[in-house]
Image 1 (spheres, helix red, strand yellow):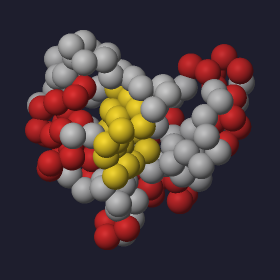
Image 2 (tube, helix red, strand yellow):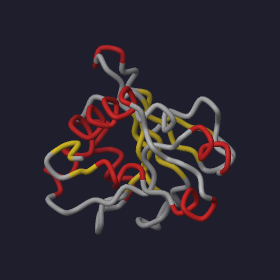
Image 3 (cartoon, helix red, strand yellow):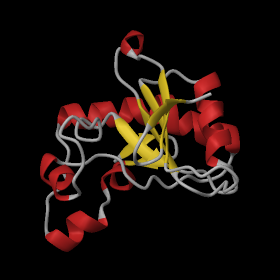
Length: 150
């Protein structure tokens, strides 16, 4: 199922952990609608800007999968509203700043980024409908502490 011009449902639901552990990772109708909004308003716009393919590392997570990987019960991945990804050849901090300055988002987190190592970490972005509900909360998380993304 196509979610946007360049993104498909299978990309946003693929999980090696789910496959290894035999965990279903099939979203429902509401989660698919959230994934479509996320792809249209975030991933597709990032892809159009950088003009290179993007492979999400984590999109939708069923509650069972989310528990299996030790993620927060309140993770927006469970609702299909969040995605983790990188853009090839783009510094993750540069990517996070481009999103912060150009897109509407709920949460933007530059996760596990190490200054001076452009390939470290990844970018987590969430998006909610209607767009007026998005908080535009941008932060950095290093595994221990949270800071504003500046």
